[in-house]
Image 1 (cartoon, rainbow, N blue to C red):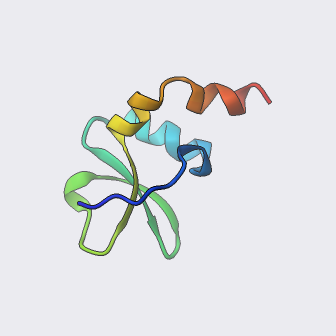
Image 2: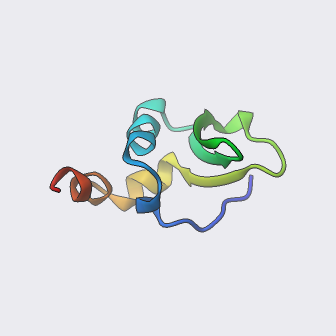
Length: 70
């Protein structure tokens, strides 16, 4: 599974929250129709994987509190 470099804050907050609840094998991918949270085994060749669960944990709480403070 290859991952593209995408600033995590460019991913809509609702998808970051969905990823947090989806578990350790979840990823956010970008498709022609928008963003999706899926399990990593559902990723196909050519999918643009933007963020993994581990990326979200590594980023810390700042990826949520920035937007909630606005």
